[in-house]
Image (cartoon, rainbow, N blue to C red; front, side, top):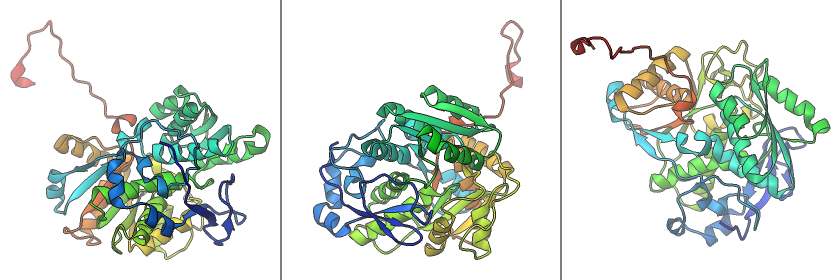
Length: 407
């Protein structure tokens, strides 16, 4: 794919609304807040229609007018194809709810939804002259960064909490990043990245500390609307740590409405966190605009949501309020049980964070916060095989007499 034109007009501070010139390298705004990419939507509306997309490959780059890629820039891609919507009819009946569809992001390169954001962000970083990138990660984002940097011919350095999933830590190193375990949380890893910027010359790719991961994650919302024939579901349950996907999808729906591609209807955006780390849910329930203090102690093993105080807290909370959404805390034990149940009853292998969304759906249904007529999208953010599985210890000695009736 060769992009012939960029429709980006400016970048905008998410807090002060100050404008910044496009096609320059930025981390945060002068106010220390995330930057948001803005487009000439009237020009896009005149240039392309939903029908025009039908002739394009079914991948995340098909929405090129709504992406910030610079003209003639090298697209750093590993084949980011559409991810399917998988119904869970038995689980829907079991829960007494409405239609449940899983958006299976485990089909993405490197096995998680992090591929979307990192493919776009690395593409932009290379086009803007970056040669060395550093990131803190709970696992999947680092794996995607390492793979896309290797694809682009860039250096990468990744810091992981010491208890991050072993599979993903090894995956990060396997793809070529300089990889380090840190005795702390992802927030402590982020502090190390920030400390090394000046001395090591790397570019800080921490969540929301550059403008373009949001735009990559935005393609989940664009793709979902197209898959639903330019409609949106009633509910989206999304595992929320840093919140890039929650912010990005809401931005997608706003842009699509302004283009006239969808109606004014928007999904209720429901942030799913753990009882062992739920700063956004707590702040939302208390009517706060920000997370006042980092969550302590962090006890959950749901690595994707272990963010004690997200940088984009105010943006996530605003999305939840603007969409008439809410937040749900779920227990790690319920997540494990639900993950196993779905595998047995539907043959579908959810990752832990995806299973957390299904637990949240059931809790919200029981509490009357949603109805059984609602169509719900559950985001399975990563391939289940990247997470630990229960042991299987049964064996048979083929040399002994086997009582098959007792098996």
